[in-house]
Amino acid sequence: MIIVKDLAKSYGDVVAVKSVSFHADDAQITTLLGANGSGKTTTLRAISGLLKTDAGSVEVDGILVADDAKKVQEQLGVFPDSFGLYTRLTTREHLAYFAELHGVTGRALERAIAEVSETLNLADILDRRTEGFSQGQRMKVALARAILHKPRNIVLDEPTRGLDVMNIRLLRTILLDLKAAGHCVLLSSHVMAEVSALSDHVVIMAEGIVCAEGSPAELVEKTNQPNLEEAFVALTGVSEKLGRTAA
Image (cartoon, rainbow, N blue to C red; front, side):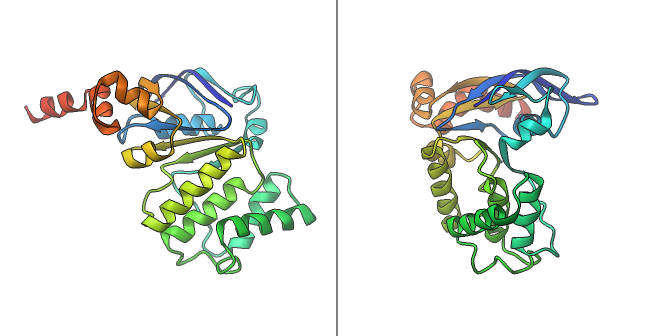
């Protein structure tokens, strides 16, 4: 379980996150929904212990990031906004390296690689260098790296970006399987169809704050709109902002 309270972060004069609070429960898929620049990635990086916040707190399975970021990271599998693959390493070498960072070695490491390879159908690329991989292949390696050590919590930043239809379907299946196994899955997105298809709980963000939260159906009902996209526009005032910009 992930709990975020009154999170705030600025980069110089730029306020990325003003005040964000929400929780992501086990056995659920929670989505941060917002336009580019709404503060989603900054929030996920704070949860992952990758940056120091100006205010507020992040708690993962009862551990505060500010108290023990390393311990928190052991409870997390992180799928970053940039895949960050080392092009001279094979898929197997990537997985072995990151597994060892999480303390998985020896036969346990071999079993973990075999299991994640079967889950993500990596057999054809397991011993190939990642240089020249397609976007879908790169996604598989990054996701395998994130779930290899079987973390309780999975954090994904815009996971379907650049993927074709079949790889999006594969990713959805994997995330739903993780949810069914009791994992806490937290992702960010601005793709309405993806959010509607996957999410148990949606946290709508705009300009560094939380505008509303609830299930997709609850948000649609709350705004009396026909779908989640229209609910999002109503809750964030996007149409009004566009009108002011045009004026």
